[in-house]
Image (cartoon, rainbow, N blue to C red; front, side, top):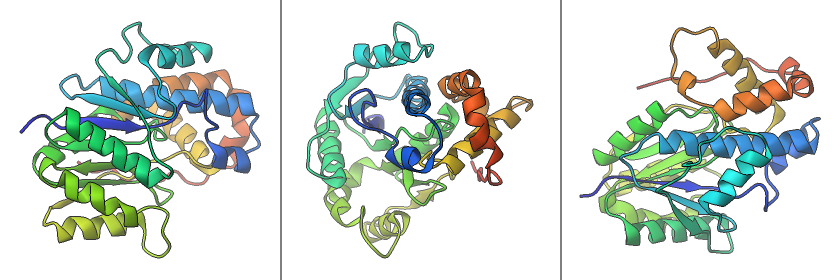
Length: 264
């Protein structure tokens, strides 16, 4: 069995409207949200590319190349190397719904690689390489991995290689449904297929101003820590927060108590 592949499922914020919930709930100007959205994507890619042994696929809407992503980073004055995303495979999302686009991306990766697949979103800038690495190990041990976000959604799904086809086919009843949460539905699918379930750390998907305020507070606290996983993450997001400190102070002042649960 081959190495577990990483599939980043995202959209290019320079081409497609992004962070619509944050825009609707926030007092921040659009240029600040545009910069944050770009930073979240760059931070996700940076954490993923730090894991050099895993094949990386990026499914975007629309199709976006490494040069396009580097241009996005440069447009927002975010630091990245000229080799940023070298070696990644770029896919175009296909389908008329989130579920169908995800299913098609999983099938595209399955045709190109062997082993399991770890799917990541790009809205959790504090997701560090160490946590991604732990999720990869869990998938390679045959576990079905689910990463819940603080807002109730999911930031990652890890599918062992022996059940990719069956789980991909089962995703139609998971997303955008009433009643059970996505976590509950995926857990039931894993149990029905006999796959051990590994529920990973809760992370913050930044969808609202409260989410953003929690990220700002945690990253500020992390500056004084002698060690944390977060030290390896969110470099671009830290740049944007520092650059737009005055504009972001309102979000920080409205902050709820940050809640991040850590596990190994």
